[in-house]
Image (cartoon, rainbow, N blue to C red; front, side, top):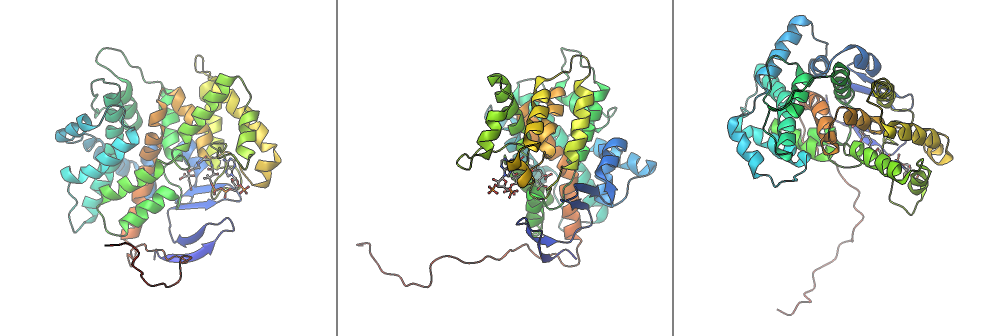
Length: 392
Ligand code: SDX
C-alpha cells in the first residue's frame, strides 16, 4: 500500500510513502537496494544486474540477465524520425534539456497502450533504460558537430555508451577496462535513492497516470537542479576555480560558512545522510585507484581530498553533520573518462532511470493508486470582499 503516512525524521523531512525498493539509514550512512548493501553491489555486480534487481526485486540469474540484456540491446536504436528533433535544438542547448524533451517525445514513436500488460510494461521500461543512453550519446555528438555513432549488438551497456560518445569514423577509439568499470560503478551508485527530489517528481507525475515517458521526463527535469543532480557539475567548477586561484579551498569554505553568502560547499551535505554518504566512500576509493593510473593523475582530486579534510575538521560542518555526498567525488570519475561537465547530470539520469521506473511500477501496482495531492497550511489573507478601484 503506497500511501502517505506522516513521518518526521527530525531534519525537516516529513511525509512519506511506503516502498520496498531502497533503504537508507541517514544517521548510520547505510544504503541498500532491495536489501543488498550498496558497497557489495558496487564491488560485485554490474549496472544491468542492478537495474534488473531494482525493477524485479531479485538479482537476475544468467537466463534472466541474458533476456534483459537482449531487450536493452534490441531497443537501443531510436526511431530514425527522432533525429529531426536533434536538428531542431539550438546549438548549445543543455543536454539535460534535450534529454527531457526527447524522452517525453518517445511516446510519439512508442505509444503506451491504455491497458499495460506486464510484458509490455517491462519492454517499455527496458526501452527507456536503453534509449536514454542512446539519446544522451547522440545529444553529445550533435553538440560537437560530429557524426552519430550507432549502438552495436556486440557491446554491453557501458561499452556501447562510451563508444557512441567517443568513437568516430576517422579515429581509433580503444575502451579502457578501468574506465568502463568506473562508469558502470558510477551508474550503480546512482541507480536509486529512496524518495529523493526527482523520484518524488516521478511518483507524483505517475500518480496522475501520465504516460511513463512523460513521467521519466519529469524526473529528468527535477534532477537538473544544482541542489540535486546538477551538483556534480558544480563540484568540478568549484574545484577548477580553487585550482585556478592556486588556493587550498579555505577561502571557498569560509564563503560557504558565511550566512550572508548564498554559496555552498558543493558535494557536501544531504537531506537524509547526517553521516558519510556511503556512495561517496565507494567513489573516493575508485578515484584513488583510477587516478593513480599512469597518465590519469588529476590535480582536482588532491584539492578535493584537501577540501574534505579541512571541512571534516571544521565545527561549522561538524555541528551541522555535513559530510561529502555522492556528488563530491563522482565528477572526478566522469572527468577521468573524458565526459564533458555538461554531460555529468545526464549520466546521473542514465543511472537513476531504473530507480525512477522501479518506483513508477511499484506505485501503479499499489493496492490503490491515489493521486499525490499534498495539503498545505494557509498563511495568506483572511476573507475580504472585492472593491472596484479601477475607473472603467
Ligand atoms: C543529491 O535526496 C537525495 O537522496 C539526493 C541525492 C540522490 O541520490 O538523489 O542523494 C543526490 O542531490 C545529493 C546532494 C547534492 N547537492 C549538493 O551537494 C549541493 C550542496 N548541498 C546543499 O545544497 C545541501 O546540503 C542539500 C541541498 C543537499 C541539503 O539541503 P538542506 O536540507 O536545506 O540543508 P540542511 O537543512 O541539511 O542545512 C542545515 C544547515 C543550514 O545552515 P543553518 O541554517 O543551520 O545555519 O547546513 C547548511 C545550511 O545552510 N548547509 C550547508 C551546506 N549544506 C547545508 N552549508 C554550506 N555548504 C553546504 N553544502
